[in-house]
Image (cartoon, rainbow, N blue to C red; front, side, top):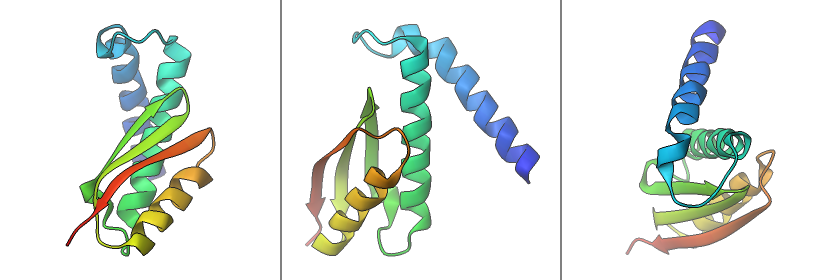
Length: 103
């Protein structure tokens, strides 16, 4: 299982490195791009694994360590918990909350 996780992460990094020049107009070094990709992957993984948050409805974007959460959440508690989870990930310099609460 660990081997599979390492293989998937390696492929993700290789893909991210190959697409770095085409991803956006903002100038980032390949290292920054890979760091942001790893942060995004870790935040999303933690959000998806939390049953109270239902992270599949939350979009995660990262630019130079700054995480932006957008999408729909189920409650204000889930929004605060999602922000806390994002802040707990190594490499995160800040979190912007653009989440809305479903009615």
